[in-house]
Amino acid sequence: MPAALSLCALAACLVPPMAANATPPAYHAETFRFDPAAIPDPGRVLAVLNHTAAAQIDALKATPIAIPPNRARAVTVNWISATFLIGLGRLARESEAAGAGAYARDVAEHYNFGMLGAWSPHNMMDADNIAIGDVYEELYARSGEAGEIAPLRQRLDYQLALLQTPPPPGKLVWWWCDALFMAPPVFARLSAQTGDPRYLAAMDAQWWHVYDRLWSPEHKLVFRDERFRSLKTRNGQPLFWSRGNGWVAAGLARLLDVMPADHPSRPRYIAAFKTLMDSVSRLQRKEDGLWTASLLDPQDPSGPETTGAALFTYAMAWGVNHGLLDRKAYLPRAERAWSGLAGKVQPDGLLGFAQRAGDQPVPSAPGDHALYGTGAFLLAGVEVMKLGRPVSALPIPEPKRDPAGPVRLPIAFHEKPVGATPQQLADWQRAMAERQAMIDLAFDPPAGK
Image (cartoon, rainbow, N blue to C red; front, side, top):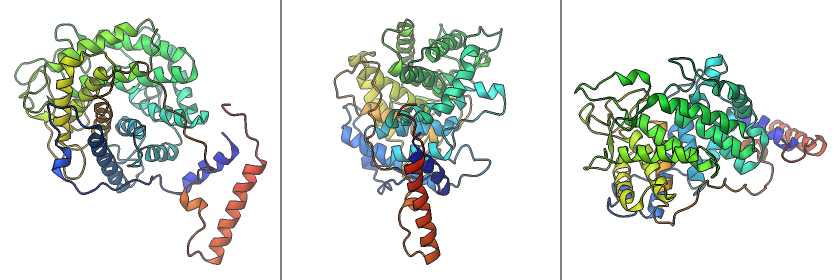
C-alpha cells in the first residue's frame, strides 16, 4: 500500500465510518407500483433502489456501533450486514446517487477489511464469516490495492486443504444450505482476481458435498440442513424454507458470474440452477408474484415473505439476462415478482415482510425489516433493470478501476477546520505537515505488490 494511503488508514480511525449519501425523498406509494405484465422501466427501478439504499444507510447511521455489536441492527462484518453491502456494491456499479459504494468502503475500512471468527478453528471455517469477502473483493476490483483482500486471502488459505478433505459421516464444513450463498462465490471470485486456481478447486469440492447431502431429488428443492429431511409442517407437508432455497439460487448466480467458462464443473452448476429455478417458479404465488416462507405449505405460515422472494427474483432475472433461463417462460414471472416485491416497500423506505434471522419459516409482518432483505432487494433490482437488454455472456468482467485521484482522507481530517482556535489550527497544520512528510519520505512498494 502506498505510504500516503497508510496515513489514510490511520486517519480513518479518527472519524465515524459514515459515507455521504442522499437522504431518500418522501414516500409515495405510486413510486413503488410496477405493472406486473411489463418490463420495468430501468430508470424507475434505479430510483427505487437508490431510495431504499439511502433509507437503509440513514437507518444505520442512526444506530451507534456498540461493543459487542447488535448484529441485527448495527452494521458489522457478519453475514447480515455482508448481504446488504454486497447489494450496495452491485448498486454502486449503476449509480452512486445513494452513496452506496462510499458507504461500503467506509464500513470496510472501519473494520480494517477483517472478518469474524478468529476465536476458534470452527468459526474460522464458518461460511457466514466469509460472506463479507465479496465486499472486499468488490472494493479491490475498484482500487487495485492488494491490502484490501490480504486478510481474506489469509483466511481462505487456512481452509484450502480442509475443504477438500472428505467429510466424516454426518459432518460437513458448510452444513447448511445458506452457506452456498455466503462462501462459494467468494472463493471463486478470489481465484479469478488472483489467478490462483486453488480457491476454485477447494470450493468446487465442498460445494458438491453440500449439494449431495441437502438436495431432494423427489421435490427438486434444497433442505435447509439434514435435520429437515424428517421435519414436517403443521399440515404434514415436507418443510422446505423459501429463504434457504433462495440463498442457494442466488449463490449459484453469483458463483456463475465469476466461474471460468471452461471450468469442468460449470455444466453441472448450470443444470443445478435450472432445475432449482424450475421448481421454484412453479411455487410462485399467483396473487402477488411472491412466495410463501414455507414453499410446499402456503398455510404454515400464510402470506408473503420477501427475503426468499427477493433472492428468487434476483436469480430469475439474472438467469433471463444471461440466457440460462428461457425468456418466454421466465420473463413474465420475473415481472410479476418484481411488481410484488417493490409493492412491499414500506413508508420508511425499507422492504417489509422480511422474515427475521433464523433457520425455518416463521410469520412476518409489514414492519419487519432486515439488512439481508435490503441487500437481496438491491441485487434483484439491479438485475431487473437489465431485463430489456440483450443477453450478456458469462462470466461477467470485474468492474472497472476507479480513476486515480488525490489521497483520500476523511473530510474532517484534511480540510482546514472552520472556526478553529489558534491551538486547533496549529494542530491541524502539524498533521498536514506530517502527512506530507509521509508522502515525501516513506518507501512505496511497486504497484500491485
